[in-house]
Image (cartoon, rainbow, N blue to C red; front, side, top):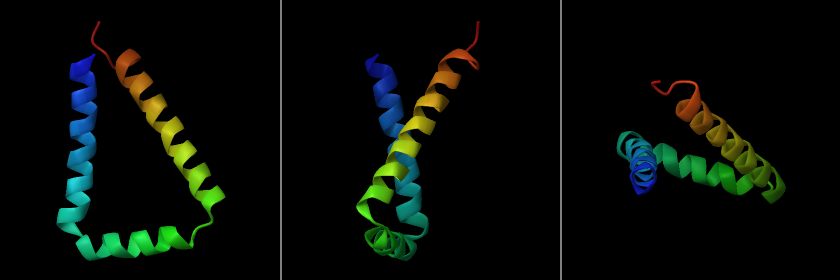
Length: 67
């Protein structure tokens, strides 16, 4: 279980690190754009991302797992 948590955290850091390394000024634009979005919309976007993440993990653990 801890191995899976460490793997997931590592993958998140890789993706976040790539964004910051490849386009740091674009990240500033994204943060400014997020500030303009109403909190309820940001919340719905977050819930959508959460749901998509759960589905992807579920598929990876079940559908794509080796028998």
